[in-house]
Length: 115
Image (cartoon, rainbow, N blue to C red; front, top):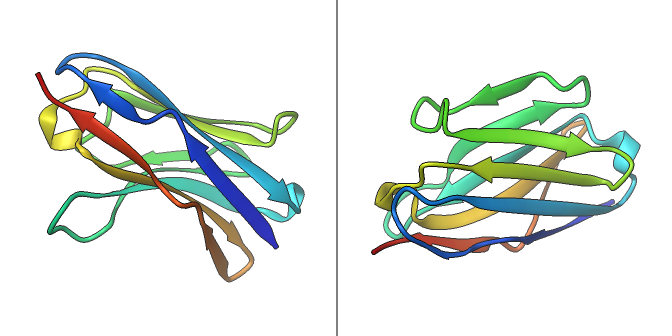
């Protein structure tokens, strides 16, 4: 079992930055991969970025060069550094952990990009 809690969302102006964090409790070293997903109103949930236990990363084309995913095993935390934010990045951001064939989700954190 893995429990995930996100934090770091908020309101930011276009061009600004935010850093999201996802703290995991439970069996951290059983996690194969983690990722950030987002869902805007009226849209399906979409992948933002993923990172494996070996630190291999993958990004959606829309965030490449602007967002950076990382994980800290000592703190059992995954982070998403978001730079050059745009209004289209507005969404609820969710953390997900994969353990074998099971997915665990956090409750989400709202990111709003607006002037």
